[in-house]
Image (cartoon, rainbow, N blue to C red; front, side, top):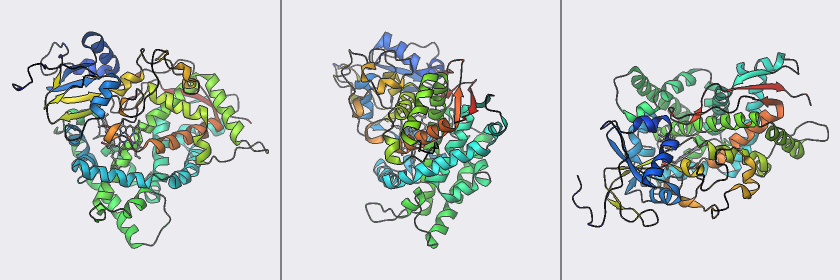
Length: 481
Ligand code: HEM
Ligand code: LAN
């Protein structure tokens, strides 16, 4: 296809595969991180894999991350890589359904909604939701009846999915969504979510019931939000700290306010952005905490030290205090290192691009390829981290745990730690995720003791967001202060 390659340039090596077209989809799908590490042994930091007819050029390490994530969006294009997945779920005129510069404005609107002021209010709301969940919910029901020395058990991913949606609804999504969570909203959400899977990513259109349900659910969900927005526009209810309220006050650079369906569809995007990423991170964090009893004890002690009143009861955390808890934050960071929810970040290559010399100076990546960055690989790279496979939150407190041969953690697109991506498409949800996860974990740790003896499960890469495989049960018992 390419006859105009400069004379001194060639294409990256293609990873060996038995079946044409199908290519490496099996090895990649089974365990992408290990597959990439094996490819790196044979081919170096840049190589091309075939995935169902698509040519994906993978670039690893700090230079690879920078090459792909630091690239211009006119060449390394996100919407060409993602829109067939996201537009049917989010709807029209938002995210990857609009030109990049429009989406960048939409991202800015979201940032305005995630102010310190709002996050400050969210801490108390999240505490309240989790506390309430621990009192009443099915998965934890036995908490009430168990005597103090008996342990109950729960599926940690299921519980975290439930707590995540409850807390996101209470905070970002707003009162109307929270009030509808166990009614209309949850079935529509399930159908929509059923259309946001690897299958939908690989095959945008299949004549399957799940695809039709996805399309119906998108319309209903969009309408559900539009109704809320219309009511909000006519009523005088101010003082809301949620995202709808914030988006209602925003304008594009040309002075145009957001239309109802744009706000609605951004709210759907928000739902999809924060749900499985946070739930999975929270589940992994609790699995590790429950398995590492010493960390569990120290986390509890950190809570006691900072928040135990003279009367022997816990008081609420503030946003500022939450940000300063060393172990709690290290637990989240270390969990994101070892279990980044998103293992592959993709772009479509719109123009031939020379690979920079920091990576390799003989290759060109031609237009029509996809580019793939995998921060997950650098986050577990044995050349960079001491005992990379060991979950050890203290490595973030005592920085000596990073390998001595490695010259420190750079920031930005070259960083070896970027669970939230980097560059133009970097995540804007990081602060919210830390507030949400920190508050959830702290509230659970305050109220129950966690235990797990049989190690931590292996990751499941077949789901859209990397999550723990079964068995995911954790034993718990109510604390007796
Ligand atoms: C982008 C991870 C939570 C909103 C991204 C990207 C990653 C990521 C890796 C980069 C995608 C790319 O470059 O193609 C995560 C993780 C989360 C999380 C690990 C939680 C633990 C959230 C939350 C929100 C959010 C809570 C919303 C409040 C976004 C948005 C983008 C993004 C708007 C921008 C996409 C783009 O510019 O193309 N996230 N995310 N994320 N995320 Fe998150
Ligand atoms: C996702 C979720 C899926 C994810 C994978 C397919 C797993 C990954 O391999 C590539 C990146 C991708 C497609 C991805 C990119 C950013 C998304 C689409 C999200 C994190 C889900 C939501 C997020 C989107 C940009 C959020 C938009 C939200 C607004 C409110 C504007």
